[in-house]
Length: 245
Image 1 (spheres, helix red, strand yellow):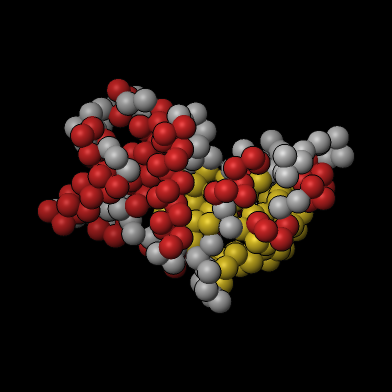
Image 2: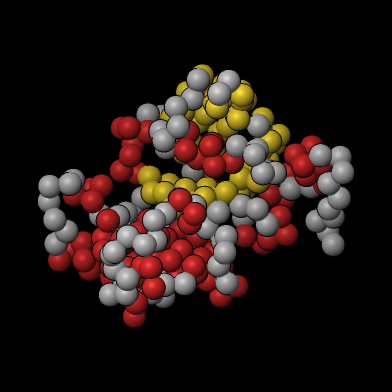
């Protein structure tokens, strides 16, 4: 982790049909952390990511990435959406999906060339999917599809990576492979922000955590704030968990 701030959020409020989904969020995310966003269903975890990415328009508040708007810093950011939001029947190969990650820097008029194809193949190799490069994405398992979308993010060579539930519906082998890649990104000084639901793995996988339930409950190093007190504040008094057990 460096002393630089990657993302600053001030007074962020988001509402759907006048019902607040995020309320008055202040959040500072340092550069170079591997951060989990945790909270119950409906806590606003995916909404927070989508607000930072400009997909959802807040009703109040400001968001900056390295001190500037997302629009100005778009090339520094990569995003892996929830698997459920992707049309897996779209007729395209694994390699083509990864190549899509190069369009942001190329622009839509230029076609990917040798350099982009080499980078895409390297990203596929990194996620263990090179042998499947010509396979239709609809023919891949859930875990394989998730690896392909991770490769598409990797090929962007971003500074900040957002991942919305990357471990959902994947097998244990894929989960281990993904977390290894995320830890390597952090080692390389990248900032990685993950919507995550498995509380048992938070201390093992992450070094930073944000507790969210419409409001921000707490944020900081896992070793300092991942405790029963913040878990109860986030999930309610009936939420019985011992993170020592």
